Image (cartoon, rainbow, N blue to C red; front, top):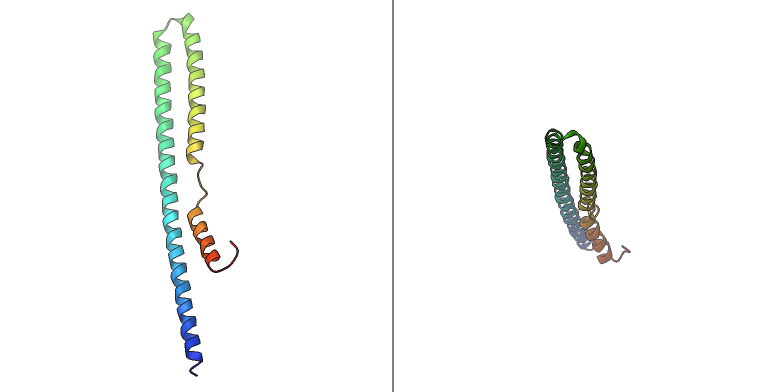
Length: 124
């Protein structure tokens, strides 16, 4: 019976260590989920504010131009403003896509789990 007690104690110790590792990884997952939610919320808020402000500014500018110019010059200036707004929209779309392209979600957690597996002697 004395041989079983060290084995039971070792297995309990190992199980306790595994539970602590699992708890740490779950805490890391929760933190990454919260960070991802904040990033998405911030990006959506900025995109919405940018779109509304840009639309209002463009509408106001077009209205001002339409009311201030002579009819024969009005069409040329309105066409140029159209091209300008299209270019600005495409540029902001490209900038937004670049800002949102980053490491995949949970990349730090996945990296840590790979290190854990490597430390146990398994292939990552």
